[in-house]
Amino acid sequence: MTFYFIFLFLVPFQHHPVMGAQLFHVGSFPITPIKLVGIPLVAAAILLPRPRDAAPRPSARILFLFAAFVLFQVLGTTLSSLRFPADDASTLFSFAILMIATNLLISTQNRMQMTIRVIVLVETFASTWLYKQYYIYHWPRPLGPSADPNYEALSLVMTVPLAIWMIRYEQRDLWKWVGRICAPILAFAVFVSQSRGGLLALVVMAALTWLNSQHKMRLAVGSALALALMLAIGPGQMIKRLQQMQFQGQAETGAEISTRARIELARAGLRMMEHHPVFGVGLDQFQAYEFHYNPLLMSLEGHPHVAHNTYVQLGAEGGIPTLALYLAILMLTLATCRSAQKGPGVPEDMAGLALAFQIGLIGIMVAEIFLTAQYIKEVWVFISLTPNLYAISLHTAAMSRKTASAQTGPATPIAPRPRLRTG
Image (cartoon, rainbow, N blue to C red; front, side, top):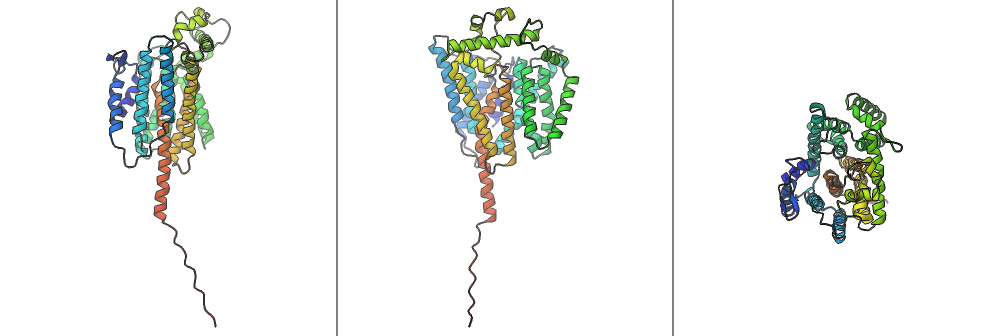
């Protein structure tokens, strides 16, 4: 498991100048530290024996959908006589390493719990880059270790429910306190990032948590106080960015231009899908064609941008089938979480973790309306863990029933009472 935890540690630092650096190339594929860890990780996952208390192997349906998602994009780009998308293919290869290793290694409740702890600790550590850049270096808008505040916000948003799960379900006080410390650090870091998409996702997740809570009044008061504190001590620029969202008329400020540009980028992407519905314009080709499909962007932005919408970007670059495969992966992931939560006899902590996954995934899906995030590794960490969570939850429930049956023993048949003879 050591290689797996090192891999998770490197996930938030894929754009770090040292921990995410391209060390060398194998053909056209760049080799980074996370790949150097990932290759022996997969080998160890395949060769090492499974623990005695391991759950049955999880379903491979998401793996098959992911394989189709990758192959369709890569083959479509190659068949369209475009250059081989080496960088994108390298990123997708990293996701494949993650998904295969997770499928093989996370096979017990203890391993799942340790993985959640590592994710929360690593993402909290990564969030300190935002605090350092804003409060110490006084950057107007911090970038975080991912070199993009929007991507950083998305990584943090999906981790907040896991930290809250630790507060509620960890058995040891030490890990409960880790959750209590990490949850506010992660949530406030989203505010520090000044990402409007990240903040909206956080609000949606808070609403979902409130709907599923048994202490709605307490949670509502706590959320209101937390929001007031964020507004009081957080970056004032965040409030200005929310106020400057403009969908029509003449855009003047940077935030207004950004809002208008995202609308026009979405129009460009939809036109790409209309003209290239099967294979799209090709991987990593959105920026090359956006001015052609929407000349109005030239008056808003002097240089090309990504779509700032995961679904538009996928459909434009990979075609409608690629978008459909991605949506199928997300829907299957949510359905798997739901089944794990509602499974018969599933322990309360595993059901709570399944609910935390659902809330985090819905937060991801909301944020992806405003961010191009199909290549954010944290998204695929959630997706890859879901089948294992389902398998472990049902296995734990079955073992609990077996233990309970063994303790009570089979029912002893009652012998019939003999009849009394009279006479």
